[in-house]
Image (cartoon, rainbow, N blue to C red; front, side, top):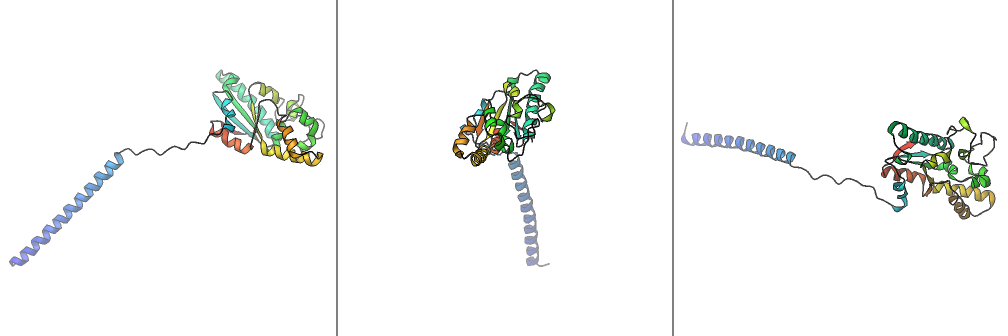
Length: 237
């Protein structure tokens, strides 16, 4: 083999060894970089927090160590929520030794259940119009009610509250969220039947609510705001 040939072979051998070494070095560098990257702590992503609005502050003013929010859209659902609210108070007392003030409970009255958040005077005056959409009938009279049946004794198991009156759970600390959109719709129906101005009827309804009731812009929005403030959601029906 000539000197030039031996020189060429040596160069190729050197370059091959160099290339292998460089590749190994690169792999080791990448591995070390990946390990260092994996071990170095990453800045935590900013956690999402809901916006707070003063219109919803009343939800935080209901006393309680535990919070639950019953959503209702029908008469049956409203009655069930009354019963469930009473059970919630009772079970927390018997099972945990808690007082009623330790449990914050809100029932949302929206859509067809909104009328049951109005006081007796509104039922005596507008009863038929209040249940026109739901077709709800008084189980006793078989006619459109002229009383708030969930505030009236004597219905027993004919209603879904099984005789537990709305006033009874209100006295234990229950609060209500009353849908403004549904109330506006009720005022519109009453206006069509009586000729009164919608705004006047709306004002009258909002001024004659049951105790511990809070008008909210919309019941479905109250569902959202309550959960953002730590209330457990429960569907009454």
